[in-house]
Image 1 (cartoon, one colour):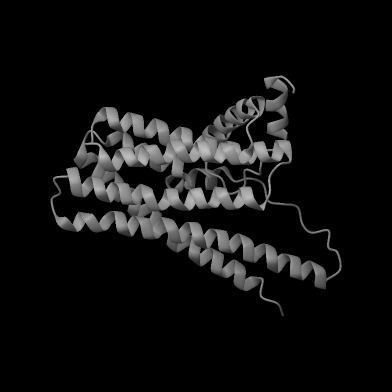
Image 2: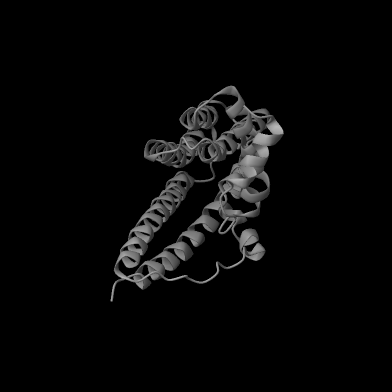
Length: 248
């Protein structure tokens, strides 16, 4: 087993492309995940075990949102646990690429944990609103449901776009002679900045406002609107991309 420095270099070499990744994931979450992946490697953990560690941090934080009265202390603790859980979510894939121990079971487990996270985070906010929030109107209880819809549809539609795109590309490759292709486009920093509001790590920052219920509701509402707008843009983009892959 190599030194931590050697492991980190190998992890950097096995890093996924930065294309389509926000600045937060590129410069904060992935580097943090790399450190955690190196520690997990030296501890002898498997990628699936790292995924479960991620789930433990994340789900414990969400349970606290639903069950504990909001405060500044709670907000700090929830944000810290969600951020660590998100970093471990990056670490499991990095560890899998480093060790070659990834597989369909690990990818499935990772997606199950992510899907549960997206459902529970907004359910926890809804419960907190109902139990502890002195809401201006009961209509605020609909906000987490709408945000949950946007988040889950974005997640599921993105996965389907990826899988259907791969299947179509494979079918086209088998039906046509080899094509050297075109060079991949460089990573766009403007796009990386534009994607910041849709990044889960940036979303987690809103929980730092739990000690000020009005500010938390306002920040959460703004993010809900932004994520809904991103959903509309993503669905349009993905539909056009898949239609372009239609045979003939």
